[in-house]
Image (cartoon, rainbow, N blue to C red; front, top):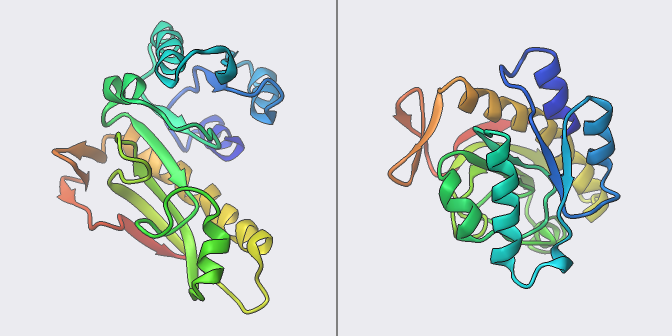
Length: 199
């Protein structure tokens, strides 16, 4: 979130962050947002009877702020169609693997266990299937013999800070869009991995 906010403040992304939401009251991003004068909201998922109720509450708050694009950054909740469908083509996520490899959790350890030589991150549109939306942008990093899950996480996080603001910039500028289940850049369909950057 810090990298995205900085890109907006510097004018690299022609957008104004309008709201930051977390399900954890102590999330660092809430303080960062409040310091920058951005409205914040906390929705504790434990206070809702179902995932759908949780998502409906978030949707209601988002609609109050006339949000054009939802950016998931460290929001570790599986979303339901209640929130995803109204923002079809207007919700992005970043995942710490070279999707379609390793959706879900523990991506870094899974890549090491598989003896992969490369890892990375993927920015993708959010659809109802977990971590399966069309990719916009990927960046890869080398996995060395010395890497463990923590060191690999640091490498991947570094490229995340580069590719997520860039992907958001493209969406805001209208260069990237989701159409009939595919991601397009400048009206050309993207490959399954999206645009690939070697770090």
